[in-house]
Amino acid sequence: MSVPVGTLDRRAAVKTLLADRGDLLVVSGLGSSTYDVFDAGEHPGNFYLWGAMGGAAMIGLGLALAQPKRPVLVVTGDGEQLMGIGSLLTVATKQPANLSIAVLDNGQYGETGMQLSHSGLGAKLDVIARGAGIDDVADIADIAGIESFRASLRDLKGGPRLARIRIATGELERALPPRDGAYLKNRFRGHLGFAVT
Image (cartoon, rainbow, N blue to C red; front, side):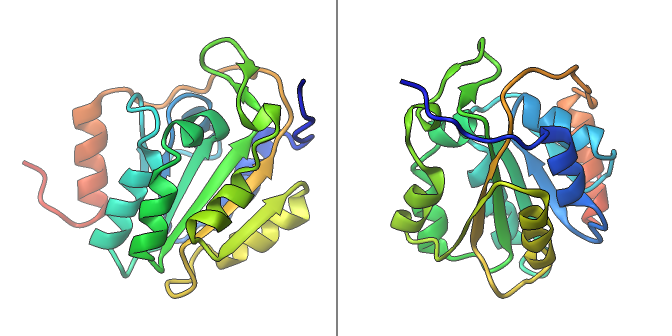
């Protein structure tokens, strides 16, 4: 049995989320989330994941703890977040005040053939996050909700926060950012002001 998830256009949702981003650091989960972040505008503060399914929230957590004066946003999909569901427990335990997680939830595993994910079968990632101990949780189904969530992204004291953003199913043309891991790492380090060796 499939559960209806959402109707938001994923690219429009991510563009709205990243509008006027300022000094926001963004970690994108593998696959479609990375394509969406890149399509919203190339930026040296974007760290694109090309693998490590389930690792986006943990990479975001490490970055938030290492850079407490910078806001950090993880943009990932429901399938990727479900793979790393335990990361929500660790995020809640560490309580990084500068970390936000946006889960683009279409109820499908987009990178492996659009099979139903657990959220497509009824699991509610917002409820799971709240149960893990993340207090600031939103279930977003419209652009107004994204705009409201975006207003909190640069708040260095209110996190961690998580938004489940209900997007429509379907595949979009891929917008491919650079895939060279060393280049992306060095560019990101340079953006943070570290020497690139």
